[in-house]
Each structure stands twice: as C-alpha cells, then as structure tokens.
Amino acid sequence: MDFCKAFNDKTKDLEKGAPIPVIITAFKDRSFEFTTKLPPVSYYLKKAAKIKKGNSTPGRTLVGKVSQADIKKIAQEKMKDLNAIDLEGAMNMVKGSATSMGMEVTN
Image (cartoon, rainbow, N blue to C red; front, side, top):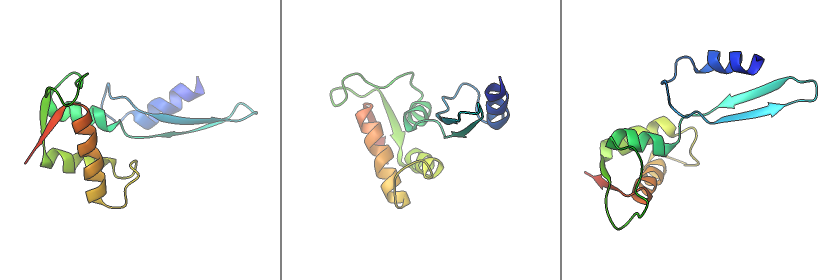
C-alpha cells in the first residue's frame, strides 16, 4: 500500500494513461526505493502520428508520418533516458524507432 501512495504522489503531474516504466528495489526490511522513467519513445511516436499502433510489417506499408520537428521534440524530452551523447544521436535513435514502427519521417 505504501508503494501505491508513493507512486501516485510521484506521478500525479504526468499525463493520465501514459505507460510509466518503474525500477523498484525492495529490501529485506520491507522498505523499497523506486525510480520512474518517461514513457517509451513508441508512445510519443504514436501520439505524434495520431495512430493506435505501429505496423506489424514495417518496410512494406506506412501507417503514419512524423515530422523532423516531432522527432527533435521527442529526442529532447527523452534525452535523459536514452543512451545518446548528443541531441543528434538521440534524434537518430528516435528516427530508427519510427522507421521500425512503419512510420515515414518527413521534413
């Protein structure tokens, strides 16, 4: 019950319905620590393209489009969770995710 209260307090300002990854560390004395992350890149891409889900056969058909501005915005927001040195690297990671989901990246 303590976890639920602590989690709800920490996530009350985040968007409702967004998937929030959590890393939980439980100790023998029944205490715990947890760290929340931002929603996955795929969540932001689907939201930007206004689609429900990615393509099951990427490379054959396109299910949506995202702009370079959307890619940059997502990369800036997710920068602390991504394993990228700079913004360009983060943008390339987000573009790769968009491509693998069957989305077209437009200028």
